[in-house]
Length: 121
Image (cartoon, rainbow, N blue to C red; front, side, top):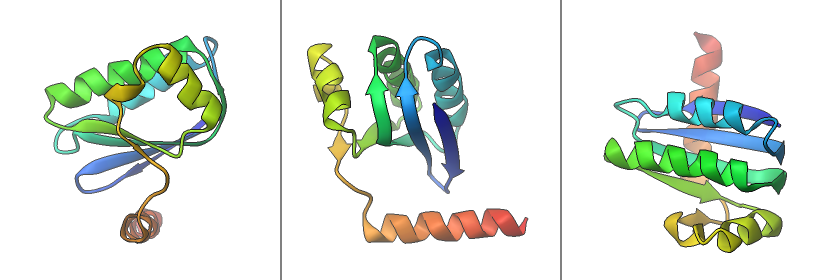
């Protein structure tokens, strides 16, 4: 599993790639929870590059969701693969996460600008 964070003004985008299983889900949980700090209570988790996720990965997402809601935000999943969606649905937790197929062009542009600004500093 690889994980990259992009901090934005009011949210954090987390891009996860590879397999998410019991061997790496504690790291995923830790990084997601650490990313959820005021003033950024919203988390967007890009799962388009996740090839496999087990129940421990779902538990990490749920922990992030709980913290985000306590902070007044939420967690949105971006482009989860069919296999990840199946795991979420099988766990009965799929309906707890809004899902978007892609990021909007404005969000993509904002993310690119933020990444460029971060490189300059």
